[in-house]
Image 1 (tube, rainbow, N blue to C red):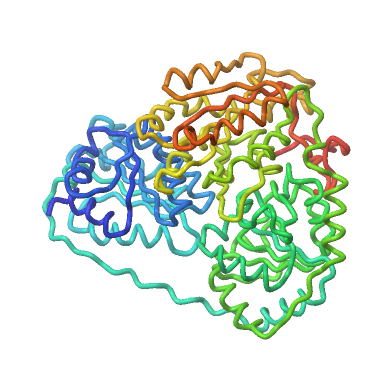
Image 2 (cartoon, rainbow, N blue to C red):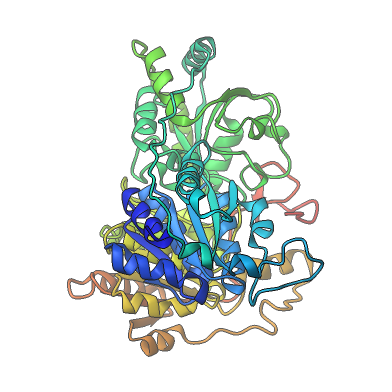
Amino acid sequence: MKVSDFIAEFLVKKGIKSVFELSGGMITHILDSLNQKTNINIITMHHEQGAAFAAEGYARITGLPGIALATSGPGATNLLTGIGSCYFDSTPAVFITGQVNRHELKGDRGIRQLGFQETDIISMAAPITKACFQISDPDTIPAIFEQAFKIALEGRPGPVLIDIPMDVQRFQIEPEYFQSEKEDCLEIDSIVLETLIQDIKLAKQPLILAGRGIKASNCQSLFNQFVQKTKVPVITTLLGLDTIGYDDFQRVGFIGSYGNRWANIAFGECDLLIVLGSRLDIRQTGADIKFIENRKIYHVDCEKAEINNRIKGCEAIVADLNSFFIHFEKTASTQLFDFPELWMNRINDLKMKWPDIKELTPKGINPNVFMHLLSSQSQKAKAYLADVGSHQMWAAQSLELGKDQHFLTSGGMGAMGFSLPAGIGASIAFDNEPVVVLVGDGCMQLNIQELQTIVRNNLPVKIIVLNNNTLGMIRQFQDSYFESRYQSTYWGYSAPDFSKVALAYGIDSKTIENMDEIENAVEWLWKDENATKPQLLQVMIDSHTNTYPKIAFGKPITEMEPFATPIEMEGT
């Protein structure tokens, strides 16, 4: 069997229904085999970075490795940002790059390049992948592909790269298929679990911190059972926003640098913290971590190095979350837990005192109010995808996510340009069901070409461009630390009329500028005749609208701007 035919059939056997790519000479064999030998949906993007982000969006929804292909040289290097995004946000993916023929590889020669577009993508990608393989022996293809899928999915998920010279792709091999062994559920010390049970019962103000690890380990239902059983209120990280529905009475809110003020205060006041699938990074805790050191913390993570890293003194439970939830349920099967009513009343009082829609008093449209109104009409959306910047935080603060709705954004990499192509991957993963893409004017211009991919595939992607004609989060930073010198954010920067751009691509569009236009605009997105097609809504936001609340850098997480002042310049 031809190697490229084997690769195509292997992907089918693994349940892959869609792959994302931008064609190039060094991957033509694989693309032809996918076309001729399978029914896999080949989604041609307009930039390899877009293909990588689309694969990430697909993977986050399906739980299967996202597949993106690119040719050698610039095609391969253009994948790197998306590869890094998968790595930092624990998303399984297999990236396949074409390479020049084996006889064109420079090897140990003291030259820069031998073959045209020859590039050592393995060395470049190694720090941001779980594993990299360059195929020199065609007969190793079956074993390497099986290993790549296993590595991408096991433990903390992440990306794997396979670089395949063109002459290897057309080689004839004997097909061989392997069956990966299922990992056993790891044992957890029962004494630690029994102590946790007693600490939950004794706690007056307990909290669960839910992170991306819950979705990454595909254990949402087990998490739901854990929350229902323990009756502990839940705060979420940015990437854990969709682990609990907005209307769930145990939901507290979103914490972190731009978290809901009431949730951050609750975070600071809790006497027991159970961390599930979060690494407690600086964007979640702030730079001053003294506030968190005076309470009992149980930290569950599959990577030992993530525990007691920044935050010391945690009770470490090194396990994947599936194992943790299964063992906890066995240990606590006969236990009953009381709902901390006084604590929840305190949290609800904080919500009433510090509502998210009153943090800003902007000219024109209040973006937090907009997010609430958008949510009220967007029940048909399977997912929201936020890009990076001010709009990302307004979305995290104020979207009303349904129990089964997903929220996807680029966290660790923080990559502008993520949401539009990732929205393509997510919609396709949902069998072409609608998703909402939330994107700022700056981010939109990074991968705007993928509007054509949406049109060509007739995807019901609802694109909301929050256009403040500036790079707002950095502009706010310049207000705080650079005496409002707006170089490259407001000065020397501009954005087009995205409504007109959308029309040029054949996408219906609207622009709104005032609060009284919001309700009709969000209804327009979901009218019967519109629900199944792409649309773009441009929402004009005043250029000086800030993102509040925001941790006053150098102070505890409970002290937030604009009511508290930073004591030092932000270092991150």
